[in-house]
Length: 157
View: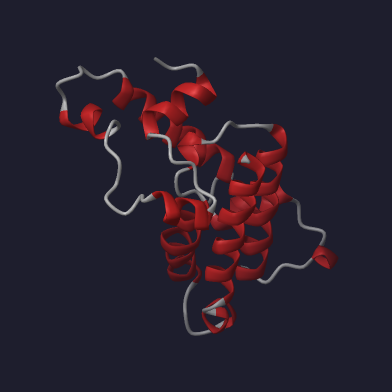
């Protein structure tokens, strides 16, 4: 189930990445503008709700491949150029996607450790208004609460 959720999330992000293809190929836009757009739109789509995923090497590898492929397209580097992944990250000033997800999980942990009366903590017990079972089933999303997902995957109480 988790693998399916990750695949679906990365497929959605890939679709978002290919839509403004002319932006990535543009010579008029600077690299920093392209990277800001990429981070705001594509990366946020890819890692949405990732703090509830159990982090495995396989998932981290998938995320790295997705991220590197997109960054290489933005900076116009092909496999023929023999540029390492580390060099691509260095040129773009980006970090590995699994590292970003790890930070999001740490933030989620901070929220779960807050006092029960804290609004941020109580928000983890709420169910979004649009999370009807038919919608959840349609998109293959788990109907459990945020707190339940994190607790189940990472044994956080």
